[in-house]
Image 1: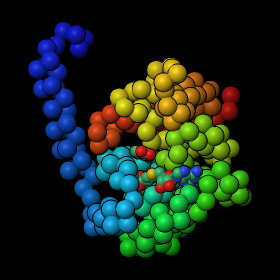
Image 2: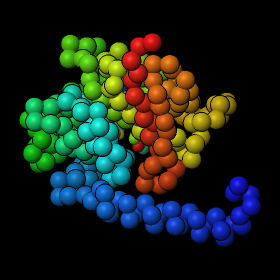
Image 3: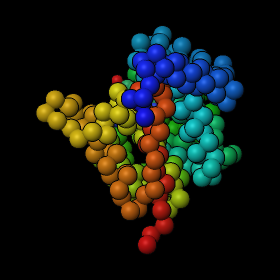
Length: 235
Ligand code: SAH
Ligand code: DHB
Ligand code: MG
């Protein structure tokens, strides 16, 4: 147990873990020009630098390939960084629909997909996700859903993800650990709305009999992570 280790030992372990992550990212998830240009374009346009990390992007791509995703839904496009990872994992003829509230973000995202040569397979739909989700029933089932928009919305996005998927589909949500697992502890009066919604999200995906789920501590700061769920066959 960690109590058996001195502070120095813990620090040493944390540093080794960081170094391993850097090496994994360098080998498994090197960024190319299109990804770097997306980060640059976001900064130029004064968008917040809150895109997923290269390792998270590679994990999304691995999951998309593992479930043979041909149709993917993303909620929260920002500048298109995660969307590029997802769209690149699609086979020819595959399609990514990404929902974005801010017209300014959507514009940067469209330019990113264009630059990456992915404009033919990605569609950015602008507006509050909850207003755009109902119409997606016509395209369902989606093979994969990536939730990464406003945090209080996650429980409702999960409801939609369940409606719009099929057994075998994968549902991934970013930021479900929040600050080193805060969203795994029951909320108190001082818990913010987003963290409280993440608590609900974690509780639901961990216990819903329709899903088999895991949460992984994986992100640039080492303090947040992704929840990953597979939709199970009925029964
Ligand atoms: N997935 C992106 C990061 C998304 S950041 C990446 O990793 O590259 C969250 C995005 O969700 C922001 O662009 C924000 O404008 C958008 N957003 C916030 N509320 C939203 C809503 N109600 N509907 C759709 N998008 C929303
Ligand atoms: C925020 C949003 C994200 O999706 C993220 O990965 C990090 C931060 C935010 O709203 O601050
Ligand atoms: Mg996020």
